[in-house]
Image (cartoon, rainbow, N blue to C red; front, top):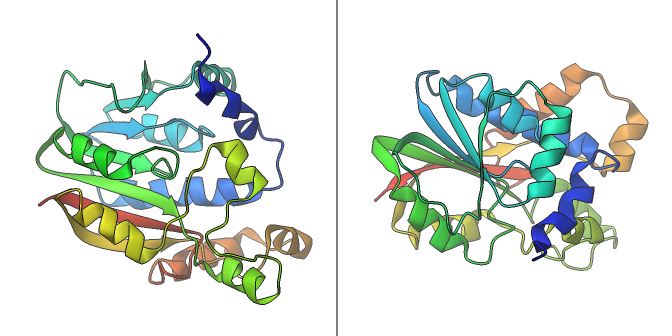
Length: 240
């Protein structure tokens, strides 16, 4: 029986202009998590996607597992990261039953893919150790670059999904308000929220500027305090 998730693997094979954005977002937010946690934590990660985060986190934590529903995405990751120490579970998020509890659960840019985000948050909050946390990262519909595109007439609706979004399997964008609502309605407590990458222009415009890494790093660091304007938002939550 064919798996519809396998149809999205093309978006994760490194052939898009948006790989520029992905490399920034997907390398920055896990570093923020790493800096506020400890290597001895037991960690469960949801989704492999482009593989940047999976590779980094698997090198950091003593116990690290990741759930991925697409066999094609898993194969793509293993091809690009053959030495990865990640324990990979080929299952859908909705079906996974752990044999242990975790200090840390990471939902990095996966809630925009699933049918029922609140059900996922509620389900996985039960798998935490006492004092454990979930980190959630999602794309922001109201980011500075999207607002500029809207004002310039390039984007009719801030919530609209692009062809690339659909290729990735996205079902929605988030705002600070909608992410907060999903967390609260999942019987969880929002402890902190921060921004991921304050992007001032379109991807093509940024690439044409050929900015040094120091500028990109500064845009990420400045954006931490402005989740409502950044490309992505990251929330730290715990069971209520």
